[in-house]
Length: 161
Image (cartoon, rainbow, N blue to C red; front, side, top):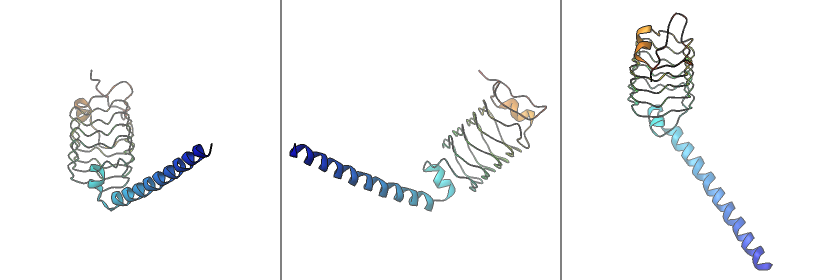
């Protein structure tokens, strides 16, 4: 019985030390992430960057899936094949952004400005673009939507197989 209690006590001490080390690692990782600029944060895997200035950045093949990018500036970015699904892009500036092949499926683009954005083969399936600004039928004709894609009145999303 004594032997079992010693093993249990050592196991609990080991667990406590492991948790303390993990906590220090998480704190260090958070401090490192906070010291990076917005583009570097995205490239390091941070999916949340509300209000970030990403203007003109090359974000091709990066991922912000499920992230909060409310109010961020994506104007002029190169976001080829970027994973952007399930994210919050409320009030984001996408003016002149190249979103070729990006995946915006099921994202919230309320009050996002898409003036001059390139949406060639961009997935907008299930995305809410109903209050997007600067969106044209020509842009939607190049993108891939579905029956669940919401677009402003008078516009129609094209379905892709």
